[in-house]
Length: 125
Image 1: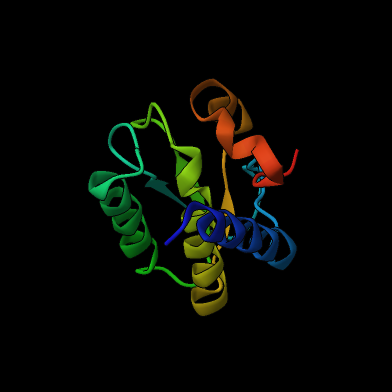
Image 2: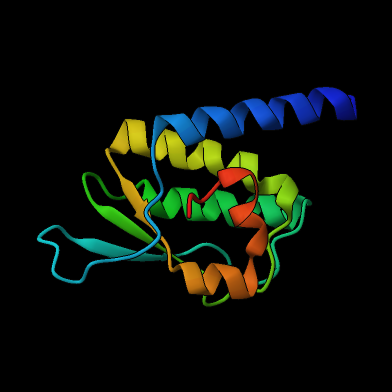
């Protein structure tokens, strides 16, 4: 697949995920629904087999739940390649539609470890 097609697909997926659901950036501890902590990965998440496996592992863990809020923990992650934002967005979109899951993430943690997630409004400020 050429880089141009890959770039177009990435932009398309980012636009779809941005308009289809909003990813919360803060957690309100007084909310009545259950918040489940799930680690996004265990190390650096590069655009390679290991990176895709980490994201698919995150997806499989989230699939166990329905109708909850998933807090995306970056405790064990030091880096996420920007190329994987579209793939992550597609996974979150599917979990939202099929399992009625919503997602939250600590904005401070993102800015320290994975600032790329703020690019292109993947995580709205």
